[in-house]
Image (cartoon, rainbow, N blue to C red; front, side):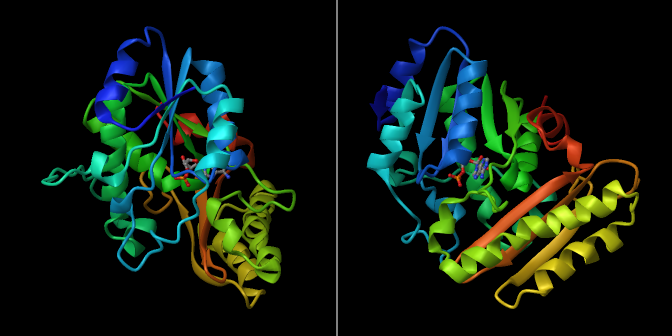
Length: 293
Ligand code: AMP
């Protein structure tokens, strides 16, 4: 596995990859969620490039950039074992040298939910992913369902700016009790960790009501909200049901819906979501509805 830290080396290494390349962008502190993206990329491409970069431009000043979990040694061991060909670990100055002035902005979708609460966040994501696409020139790029809004924003960017990249969306990998794996879960104490599983239980309750025939988004939302409200440790930020292609209100109740939850539990702010009907939460279903497949 080649480890690369400069733009020039990455460009040089990319030139020698003469078959299909899959790219998995990450911020490190790798867990099984990241590894499932890498495994899928490994299966579907001849070469896999993983990037580890804690992108300062997607953190607001009050957010936890300095405190974001880091484990480079552990990450490199996992990537080596996963059969990754090339890992790109740039410093912030390599990505944003003195005089950097260009940003990529996707409109509308980025104003809702996560974008409303984190105004600069998606601009940071689309800017860094544009750079990574230009550098790695992947055929496919792999993103997790857990950040569903991110993936829909990136899909819009790929379409509007004609990036020749397929966006593949991989299902959320969970702990045994349903909690979505996240690098930020390490901040949860034992009691908070127990409560955190309720995010998934809230989605499941809404999913079960949907399977029984309930289609009213407001009712489904209330069912999920009640699960979260029954736990005083959980500070719910939002429960929202949207049309997954626009992130706006559901128009046709028989079309797939996306239910999303965000909550502060102790130090971390946690996210989760699922498509309804539940059967769509597979790589194929997710990539068709949220990705470019
Ligand atoms: P991050 O390092 O948090 O920026 O995540 C890198 C990629 O891994 C993003 O596309 C995430 O959506 C994805 N990811 C994070 N957690 C999970 C998970 N539990 N299951 C699947 N993918 C995930």
